[in-house]
Image 1 (cartoon, rainbow, N blue to C red):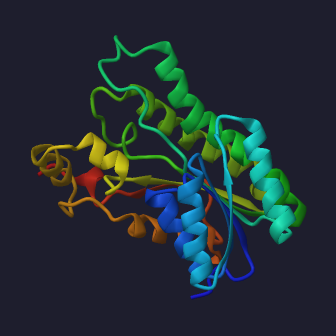
Image 2 (cartoon, rainbow, N blue to C red; image 1 turned 180 degrees about the horizontal axis):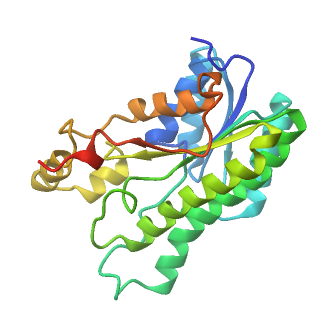
Length: 254
């Protein structure tokens, strides 16, 4: 407990899934958290849950595609809690799916804007603030899709999430000398709304779960533990990594 005592964290995509689980865990570990997503009601519910448990949190609803929102999240962290130490850029979308010859330019661009550009804009302003206080930890949610695994019909998702790995490495090299660590997690299947939308029959669920060595999807709380490691001083010498948290999907052929 208290691995993040006196730390201040921003978490995007916090209204559900991995982001919500991570916000609850960070708060339980002593962090003051700024939670972001598009859905105000879900964020308010999350803040209330954190506060009932004795934690500190504030919600800022908005769209990660807007640079003004990235600025707002940092400004609220500083105004409310005085600094910024950790940022988990987790907001994402599956985007327009289907055969790549039929995907619209708008659908492609939207996935890139949310998954890749939104994460860049977040990190741009988060790192600038962290540098004022000697450094911090920035974490992105990428995926095993497009890295060690490929599924047809989700080119925009795969490309945008793969781009985060290059962004992670560049930022780690650029700001490591000034105390900012940057890493990405690459989840396998996680039991979230997106997972259930993609796997809407027992047959699809069984197929995807069977791709993993553990033969199941992860719980969001399991991914949150990996994010906690990268956020905390336990990973003080870890930066620039694309960390697979994939239940063995990358090595399974049975």
